[in-house]
Amino acid sequence: MTFLPVIERELRVASRKRGTFWMRVIAALVAVVIGVGFMIIMRIAGSGVSGLGDALFSVLSWFALVGALSAGLFFTADCLSEEKREGTLGFLFLTDLKGYDVAGGKMAVSSLRVSFALLAIFPVLAVTVLLGSVGGAQIFKTLLALMNALFVSLAAGLFVSSLSREAQKALAGTLFLMLLLIFGGSAADRAMAWARNGRYLTVFTLASPGFVFTQAQAWGRSEFWPALGVTQAIGWICLALASWLAPRTWQEKPKRRTVGTSQDWWRYGSTARRARLRAKLLSVNPIEWLALRECWQTVVAWGIVAVEAAGLLLLAWAQVPPAFWVVWSGLQSVAALIFYVWIASQACRLFVDTRRSGFLSCVLGTPFPLGSVITGQWRALCRMFGPPATAYLVLQLLSAVMVGRATAQMTAAFTPPPMVTTTTVNSNGVTTTTVTTNVTTVAMPPAAAAMLKTARMVVIVSVITKTIGSVGTFAALAWVGMWMGMTSKNNGLALLKTLVFVIVVPSMVIGFVASFVSFLVILPNIARLMAKASVAGGPGGAAAGSAMSSSMMLMPLVSAGVSLLLMLAVDGWLIYYARRRLLASLREEAGRPGLEPAPLTPLPPFPPPVAPIQAG
Image (cartoon, rainbow, N blue to C red; front, side, top):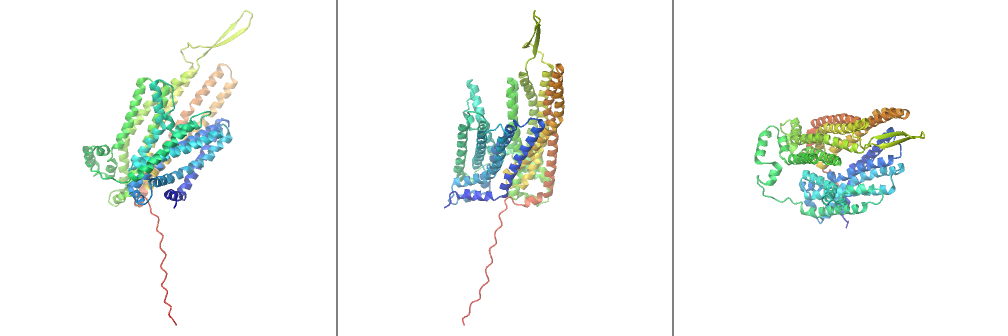
């Protein structure tokens, strides 16, 4: 008897897949390319190799952490729920298999590809030890923290998948659970410290896999091992719950539902809304009507915008310290991530579901125009996410002004006050020079004022360029998501490919090119000012030093402008390519089933009959 037969079988199948090999190779190539590009930028900047190891290790490890934490969203969030929708999960429990066999098998096959990809990055991370500033203990703890984050993410996705039946709800639940694990504990501890006016204690923060990662890179005594134990316990609890729930939640229980129930109202809206939408769109474009039937995505998107607007008004009214606005900019990045994932998932979902069920093939078999299928989905996405996304971008622009003001205040707090030089001559003819700090001076020196103005302008321009680029990113996510939904077998894989091709890969390439161009543009001017400051003395040298500081602060402006141009160009090309591919091969892809069964091996032919042997 084989112990855990499903896990063994799934591991054997996954290890022979072509995607497992290529994912490992691509992860190693990406790590090498990032390392080489980072070394080139550091070389151009003239920073030397003293801090290259630590900087490269931080960049690669944070990239790996993001990938590990998001693995559950793409690989395990829809593994059990997909089996429930297809009705194949119940067949497994007709045998003597247990819940831990099925859950463990899904966990094994989902984790194998990501684990191999993560292991392929580890040698590149270990190279940073040879560059200096990184110790062996730091490497060991960081690798352990990355594997721990991967396990917690996959277990959390498997737990949510055991409770869900629909792909969209499973993805949303996994995303919410991971955000709660990563940021919820720290927020709870800070709220408790603020309520009792005491110091910050890490109690609930120990449940965050991100906190384990940060403690792995801390020098000296840290809370790495307690946090690692707590997160491991959470991961195993999620896996145990998924094993217990899998044989108990696969049945589709019949429900007597009427049109006026609260569940129907939350999902489809009121009866009047449904009748109005049907009369308006069904005769014009049935694909657009089908994509717009569910209205809860729009309600949740408007809820996120309302929460962000309330937070912005509260911070502006309470006149909080400038550090709060830095935290607020981080929360805005989380809200942008939610919008990106949501739009990409909804763009993939319609084509994945209709192609797997055969509905899209039936529609294309009618005289319904081919282009109207794509146009209907695009118009539905614009009507569903266009208004809340526009409101979010407006709030982002308003926040840019407040964040720029807070940055200027924080820069002014670190700006030293002007010095006053006093020269006295005593009776013996000895000259004494005294330098004191003039704390009573209210007027800021011109150099410091120019630096503050530049800092504020850098923040505002960066947010404006990011907002303009977000419009193109939203459109690219919609079009590439539709194309990936046509060519992928499930929603999770389509979402992963959409985010990789639209956000991950372009961000890395554009970031490297923009940094390279900004260094080439700014560094000659900085070198000239440095030479002038070293030769000139007195006020001339001080003016050259101030101009050099202003030039260095202008580097983010050049990088933001180059990034915006490249981002718009890449998004435009992705939209054009995805639309062209959809129009060219939509009918062919719609006829291809989502899960192609393996061809059956033909039976060998029967041997020809042998003639009887006659006696004599």
